[in-house]
Image (tube, rainbow, N blue to C red; front, side):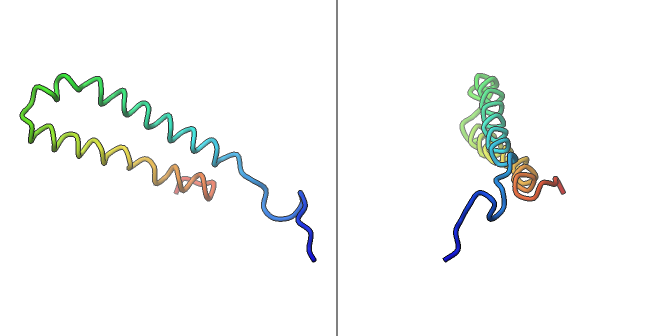
Amino acid sequence: MSQIGPDSGPQPSWRKPAGMFGILVLILVWIVAVASFSAEIGSLPVLVQLVIYVVLGIIWIMPLKPLLRWMELGRWK
């Protein structure tokens, strides 16, 4: 039987915890930014609000692809 010890297999990377922390910071910053405009957005017609919030709900995902790639591979591109 093979034994699994501290020298077997790849070592865990610091990039994954750092990336997870970065994702949480990104979400927090995005929430604060969107919430700071909630009064202005709330004064618009409901259908316009719907479009704005759907777009804003999708846009925050765009920086995740390079961040997730960096977490996994160690490079941005």
